[in-house]
Image 1 (cartoon, one colour):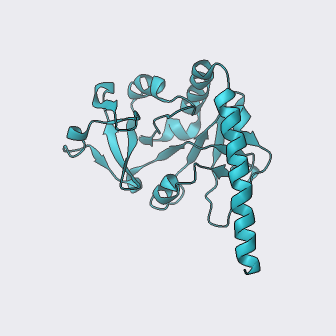
Image 2 (cartoon, one colour):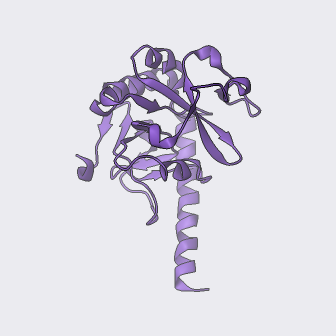
Image 3 (cartoon, rainbow, N blue to C red):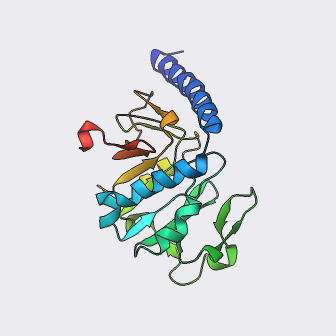
Amino acid sequence: MSTQQTDANALQELKKNLRAQAHERRNAQENKDGLSEIICDQLMATPEYQAAKTVLWYVDVRSEVRTRNHFPKALGKGQKVIVPYCVDGLLDLFHLESMDELSLGMYRILEPKTELRDQPGKRVYPQDLDLVVVPGVAFDRRGGRMGHGFGYYDKLLEHVKPGTPLLALAFECQVYDEIPVASHDVFMNAVITEKGVIRPAKNA
């Protein structure tokens, strides 16, 4: 086995262990609804959000920062609200105009109703986005991100316009001083927790 392969394997093992620890921390977090409201309010108060016309929100699953409770507020603020849904391992994007357009999918994940996805004006493309709200398992104060390991957002972010702000939502318990990242990993412009907005020095 080459040194490069050994290093890659060591990185994957480190990520696996850290991902498990961060999941445990997030699952154990108390008052998720209340803290999520604080986090989402802070997101919407950022200059990036205020300036954006088309915003991709994520739809929370399991113990992630809960975004869905904030969608009605977001829909009333004038921005075009976009939500993702998964098709064949990729994220497609949907223009959300009403909470009635969402339903529980196969894995009990809230997603756009199937019959609405191909209606005129509903399909949105990554290059149309002015801001991406990014979920994750762990983050660091440099803007590093660790996802679930499936690469959904990595693939999506390859296609957004250069310079599109990437704002991550997390509970403070998910934030580390530094997490392992690979050369191809994308860094966040800010990580928003219940304690405030973390802006890496390079993005300040």
